[in-house]
Image 1 (cartoon, rainbow, N blue to C red):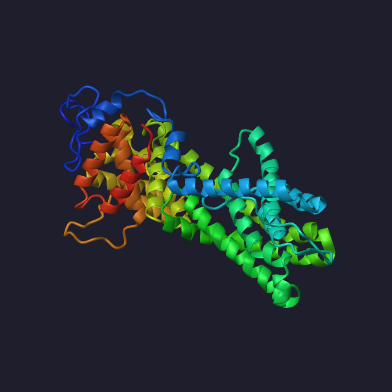
Image 2: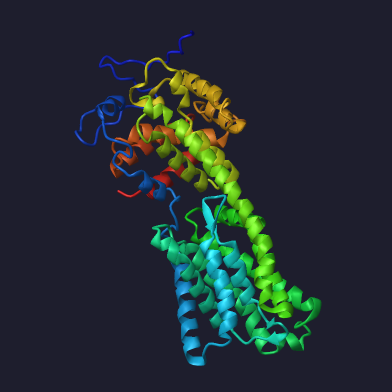
Length: 479
């Protein structure tokens, strides 16, 4: 049997691997002595998540929910103001047509119960959103005019969404406050565009209360509400506004268009056939939702398989516990900072999880698994070995290509840039180097020193905008 290829570190007299010339030793913040980074790592026996729980790291790079930014604060404050105003209005002028409100509220609550995971680390309640939009745009029911206004729409849809969240809260799952806030504001906006004009006869005077003009006006209101929801989603996102806006538009073109169409059809059809429109025209959206759920399940299975394969290096003792997950979280956070599309973020995550798989071909583990401490040629060899393994796993071919080129600097020896170098490879290279050097001491001082090292090598080794994006991600880390 052919022996696996040996990729030794470059030894120092004390037995620890030497740092390449572009990564000088960092003085330890704990003792003040000039210990080598590799030496410090081999002494550590802490479990996974060393110094920082993995869940905290995921949250810090924008993967754990609504970012605590001023933008989110403004959106939440606006939703709260709208809710309070609606309660005051209903308390003064009363609640009308309770059975109609109960029917549409029930649809919203059921939709909240059957939320669907969507691409891009998000969840959506398509049926609930469509039901809320239909109620906001409801003018007549079975030929009889309705009289509920904007305030009642906001109260009914918000209350129904809260009822639908109760089982999630009892199970300890995330309640999805962001989506609830978005729905309050976007549905309130749709109702504001339609209800006052319908109830006060403005549409009737302009010939828009029946026929094709009525349907066109409702469709225009729904489209404007959908655009408002896109903007709200971008504001609530922890990522850059431009990138978040593009992601939200992508989501609108997928499930969002079905939600808008269903809401419009239910509101128009209810004017002719009454409440039977709710179950009748919800079926197509439920089928679409089932398709997204199936797709999400396939992706989740694939991700679990890749994560399990990535853990093989940890189980075999080639890398430190939690290293692949930390690098993946950092890389995905940097990718979001750089406005990568969701499809590229998925490939980036897969490649980051499997970036060290080539170490399984080594005879002797690298001390601490720190590939950033090896000479560049040895790093390239590990990348090629890992790429060959990945090509046999059924993972997209782009992942193997990214891993094969992880060790390549973003500038060639002659100073020119390599246009064929994947951005994902540059991101993982920087994230891996950061974790190799900083995971033993995740404090702000060590963090700043490591980032300074990476910045010092942006002339050739690390792409400057990747390092700056990594610095912004690290600034959001707690501690």
